[in-house]
Length: 535
Ligand code: COA
Image 1 (tube, rainbow, N blue to C red):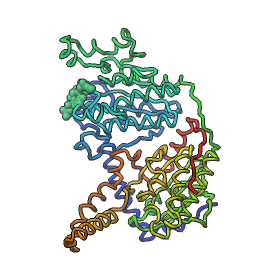
Image 2: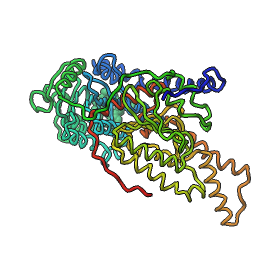
Image 3: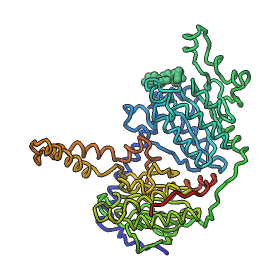
Image 4: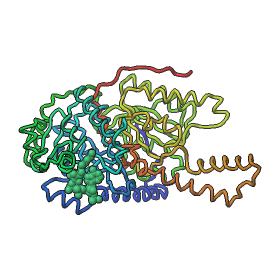
């Protein structure tokens, strides 16, 4: 059934919302430009003077002309490490090469020599996880000085640290997920294992080098004096050590060869969806800017968002009149069938039961699930506890955790408390999780957290028979908590720490979801399995 919009695009509210979202989008554009400056002008000039292409230029040339690169975690490390590591010094994303979706990981050597900060490691591992889940060939454009030495204790020894990169390569190679690398700069110490653990690799003459210990370390350890070229250059590795498979003279040649390698993978798709003809929504995607209220606490009908994301705004809604604070239904996005679960208010027992039923149905029909999160949490209070809201919420969490279909989560507003869990937050392994720039995420709202802590404080004072805080003192007590929550709940704070895969323009939601679904067709679905539902 076609969703009819009741939005008036000339109304005061719509225009106010739109202007608020435009401010957020301008900020997103500015922050993106800053990050694209990478390590700054002089580092970029130095990089180019060595006849090397910049990381993003390499990617642009590698992917099919005119195709889209779905970049992950552009704002990794934003406002962390004194802002010395834009994008955490590594670019990751999915792009098409000969129409095959490939996971690309490119070190940015203009950022502290492409070395690995803790969040660089986290970002690299997240990209590999995306490749593993979606069965995507991995392409490593290597140009890195290895570990960022001042923070070695946070990148070197633990399970999810540097070594895990090589473990993942071995596991993926074993599963038939091609591992291909091009060494276009340094590849030092542990980093040497990236090309060494690859199925097939390329090294660029004069700029590419691979060694476990560089010339200064060799001199210090053994007294031997040796040049970079003689220790680990392209000629040595392609003619003598056998570590490199292909020798090329420039980044451009390496990229041409990478594209050639991709033509010989013999890859097949393993998950079939009955795709329909792609049809645009009946309403403009850019109208989403005016639909989302400036005041995040204000309630609105989430169907106004759904109608601007799905093909032809055609939504087969399920259980429309039951558990109305959650909207569920089938639709198509870029022709792909999807099941949508969207918040339309606080979660009650009925909403959780309805969502559980719907998730199970999508799972059985092998239809990808889309979660549109805007949730303050589950309803609390004696009446609702007595109705069993905790066990009904648990059913929803059980259903989504065991759903084997690809899941995608978009945080379109607030993401608070157990609502984050019930609506497929990061811990529930959606294939991808994206934030709109207005999104907020925290265990509860700042005001609620400040009030909880104030109540605890007053109770302590009462217990110690001391004077309670006056209204003024209570305000002073609450303010730093409010400030902290405001800062820590922003989309940038989340993206900097990789709690999500990035911040997107709401008008790109359709495209981002379609690309996510498209890449998911590469991987087989796991076997169906059921945990025990508490009845
Ligand atoms: N840890 C921390 N910082 C490092 C680093 C490392 N491993 N390697 C380089 N850097 C920093 C430099 O201090 C410099 O910082 P600055 O801009 O604040 O001065 C920046 O990265 C660029 O380094 P620079 O040497 O000027 O760049 P380059 O392009 O000429 O060379 C490398 C880059 C990576 C080849 C070179 O710096 C190098 O060999 N680093 C040591 C690599 C190493 O031995 N790693 C061992 C890891 S286990």
